[in-house]
Length: 310
Image (cartoon, rainbow, N blue to C red; front, side, top):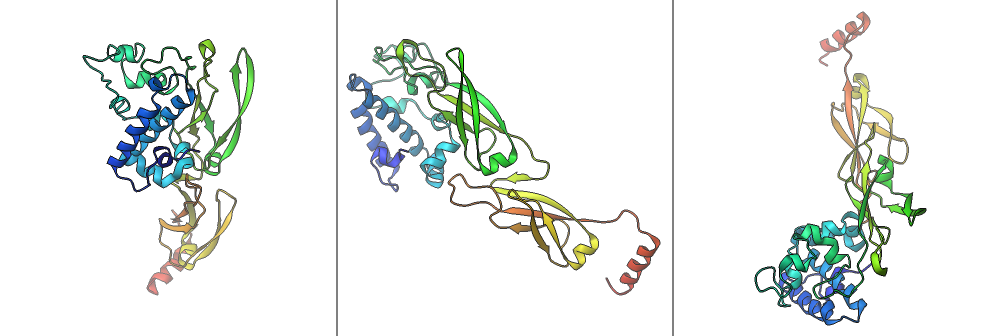
């Protein structure tokens, strides 16, 4: 997988100005209008534009540095990457602008009748041409679908076989779902989108993940929270209880005198980080169950304990 820093030829500690300068130089070199007979140059142009969209944004760059190239691409779709990115940046330095005097008669012509970045996203980065690239084959439409998975599948990762409609028939493909994925994240299946006219490449299929809630586990970031009810005597004297985890039941030691709503930690028993290098923890919230009514014998014993100062 391409590393954004390597694509732009800059150090990981490069300043914003160094990143911008490197991008401008490469964008001029690989711009499709300067390489009309070189499809590899167009692909490289798209890659460096994507790299710049991330590294020029402080928040996205921080997340890229945190998750690494693979983890970042698992968490963020191409649409996420280019969101809030000033599309003018791609054409600055080439003499293009979106107002009067534009050589391509303004944004309407530039984006084939699309007047906004969101609407023209596939046109610009999906292969349907750049200014002056009217002779290139158009790319198929990107499609989106939703896949519902279980809580444990999202936490631990899984593979799903998806059936697609293709050329009037059915085609099965495997989707790898990384451990730790959240609801709302998109995974991309390259070339599984809409067909392209005139021999162009097909679009991509984006799978939006929907994670089902769990009756026992709650997720807080990469941590798991489980509630455990214990009796008053167990809270006072201490005990060992079996608690559920993502990988099976585990024994948990509850110290004497544990107050209600205390959280005990099972280290490393949570959800995998996107980088795959570590896991969150599982926290067991201890809930002391008080009896609503006491028998006569229980009341006598509690009264005796009270006299003893308990």
